[in-house]
Length: 109
Image 1 (tube, rainbow, N blue to C red):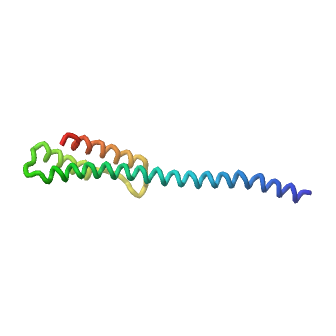
Image 2 (image 1 turned 45 degrees about the vertical axis):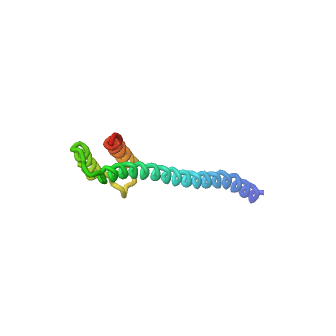
């Protein structure tokens, strides 16, 4: 009789463990999807800023304010201080903040 109880106990423990494993698999999948969507959004925003800079570059004459903005963009990007190997949320926030600043430069070009 004790063997049956042990089997019953294993069966009741296996179900929550299986469910927990499946939920963790779902969490990992969700994280990957969120990271991919975030990366696509940020890369799109960077591409928009780059396109604005490229369009300005094609013009024959550049205003002094645009040249100053370009220098500021260079400085901002070069001074971005992140530690990519650590994968920290704060670094993603720094990148988001940087992109917001870059957008402010080119939105009126």
